[in-house]
Length: 270
Image 1 (cartoon, rainbow, N blue to C red):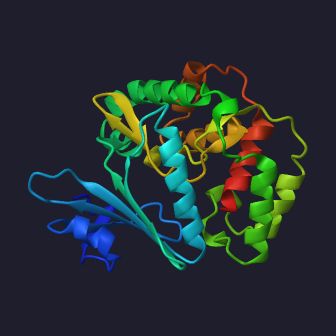
Image 2 (image 1 turned 90 degrees about the vertical axis):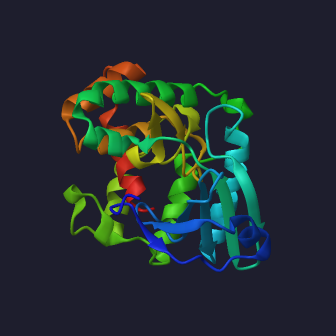
């Protein structure tokens, strides 16, 4: 167990159709990247593989339901967790998924500096594969116009965590972020099928390759810079040269800085 990423916990109260499947497992709650819900790793059952369980209440119910539908669809094209079971009640949702093998890209980059170039190359190849999925086959919209509407609603409802902004926006208000976004509009989108949160914590590396991605709740058609902005921002924590390497391997030599900034600003509001 990685104590920096999860902690042991008691079994959560779940509907019978879920809890019956989890008899004999040990429970650990994820402490990285939670956004309103809870994520558990179920492990230690003899002869059984690990499972992951997402649970949410109220507004998070729709988000978990959306992820379930996207996982079923995306599995036709790339490796994602398989949906083992899904239960929704009027106020709660439970999504039980298979494990994607490996360590997160962040863990591998942090622990193995000698593998960084190879990992970045694998990430770029995986993103090219995702962005090559035919747009006309994707039923989900995650375009910036739609996300701006959602962001405005989150601001008005007081749901934006202003204390979690990136360092360069430390002390900003959500309204200041919103105003900065407006100054970068309009722009012409280059629509592809995007992951929506293409961060190093959502990509699993196994045997030097990307074994799959997790947290697919924002998958949908959007500008390709939605994914590029987030992964490049993550790589900045390690080395600017890795950002350049990623762009080269992905196939962009002169990135659109305004689009990168727009999508980073927009991501602050979620």
